[in-house]
Image (cartoon, rainbow over all chains, first blue to last red; front, side, top):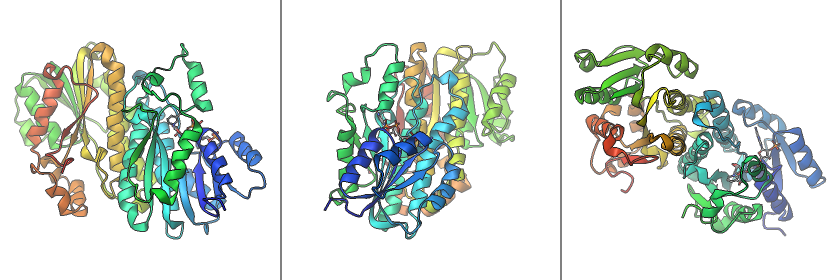
Length: 247
Length: 242
Ligand SMILES: NC(=O)c1ccc[n+]([C@@H]2O[C@H](COP(=O)([O-])OP(=O)(O)OC[C@H]3O[C@@H](n4cnc5c(N)ncnc54)[C@H](OP(=O)(O)O)[C@@H]3O)[C@@H](O)[C@H]2O)c1
């Protein structure tokens, strides 16, 4: 029997990168998954990769947090009780201040913060979860150290970490734990795309991230620990998974 | 020196204006409330001007600033002392509520920063200060949206500070604890009712005076702090460590 046999776990942003590797791992460990993506391409990839595994799919656009309630209620059987929720959705943003208009800032904050809070609100309702529910959202070292042009992204990740601290203090009475995982550079397709747009191919962050570029499996291992009962004493925290970057 | 104070009817903003005028600076107050308090009405200075508009409607900021500042006028710094508070448990923390909070505490600030930090608007060596809160780093039950907005503000400051450093422009925020001025506002009254007595006892040095917060702002605006940038200065009466 797998470690997560018959546990219901929701992964948002499951079609790529960290979320996808986590989905593969949890599938092997016997979990029943609710896998989310926002595009048809993302949904197709999930269908192809996990055909006949009995997992559920959830399609929703996090840029529009107001649409999530209807999407969640219409697509997902409301009798399901969740044991875990890992949020891997995160819109990137790199813009100098002069181009940082409110509409862009709002889009990033909607997708990265408001939608995460909204998903928590929807699943933490009565009968929506089992005691012991573990919620984890992926944050970034950007929330802690400044970089030119990453103002909106950094703001969104710091906001999420702050919300996590408050949620933990509110939800512990329902036996729900909430944490964020502060990731350094991880080798995903999004990371490869980002490096391609840079004029020189060196990543200065890696000079400080002395354990080198992380793999999605590195991050997944920590997520599995945070999802499971072994971490039952950890809540309200922002745990670094940064190859030493913040030290 | 010429400074702009952006305020939402808060005593902290008025107090900053008074102190800056006393220091012989030129001050522009932009307030959402169109009534000045007695303290500022009485102040006779031709170095102080006052404008009012609803800048929480962020699309108005660009055009209004064109009315307020002459094309040639350049600031030495500005302070964002506006923003809103509010407590709600998760079940009531709707997207609309989160958006209102982000709008007043982050989006409006960033839009002012975007426009006022342009080369034509902010002098080399200028200083930007925003008022944040210890809620940014300390979780309090039912302050999910408020804490998120203040943490976002603090992180945004770090991004801006790295970007504007080449023009020697500094950007900082102040993480304040319980300040006298806030206690007059109804929304904070509600907060106090909801948080435990214990929370207040934890601010070991007692309630922070509005003038003391304003003094820290004036210091961060001045050249005396010219190597302080990208920080979130704690002014919390020892709350965080207790
Ligand atoms: N990779 C890194 O180096 C790194 C570093 C620090 C933090 N992080 C954080 O880690 C998380 C995962 O990043 P990643 O690089 O593994 O994956 P990613 O390529 O950023 O994609 C993650 C997922 O987000 C979904 N997504 C994109 N736009 C969306 C929207 N508008 N609404 C809902 N979902 C949307 C994608 O689904 P569709 O394809 O269907 O749109 C995809 O499944 C993010 O929060 C990121 O900020 C990553």
